[in-house]
Length: 254
Image 1 (cartoon, helix red, strand yellow):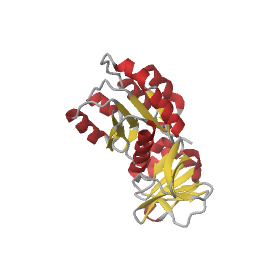
Image 2 (cartoon, helix red, strand yellow):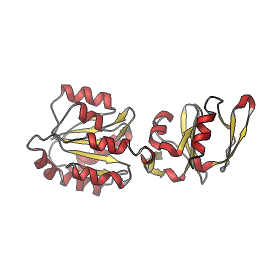
Image 3 (cartoon, one colour):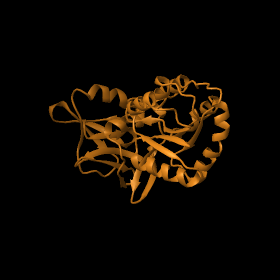
Image 4 (cartoon, helix red, strand yellow):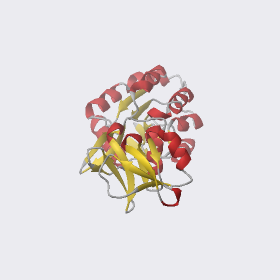
């Protein structure tokens, strides 16, 4: 069996590949792809696999863009951290999903459904991913419910509601919760800005701040804005003069 995993988190992809090879008894050849761009190039030149496991939100776009650019009559299992508002749409399109963080049990159920999905795709009917992409694109403020972080040898989901801010320090992204805990997501601030939607604001190159973490705002040197936060944080978080009007408009949407 030939399987493609589309996942920009290398550790998640490796864990998924290991679990798949343990659950499937027959020989399996697995290819890992990291982005929309890489996946489109791969599928244009390589034979279609038997099955695809794909994250939805990749660093350079939604994975639906891949299947729109290169129509494939292949069963797809989406590995998603999206809220359940979109999941009925997946079923309606003959596509299945597993929620992140996946378990051996959820992965085994998805693999068992492969035969059912295989029959749906047997007539080479290419599924319509445009509607799914429009559905998700129309819900920008509800993109994900959790951010995956790495703690020791584990992958953990941290709920967006628990995150106060993200900040860049010494080239490492830090995630700070309202309870004062620090974790390290394997994404840059640009990717996190896309994932977190309208609940967070990119104050500057170093900070992505949750609306709930802001108590009030004061004027600062050179007409910058200084944020007073509800959490203990030693560094001053400022918004530039150019971003100030956009920030204040965003703040009113609380």
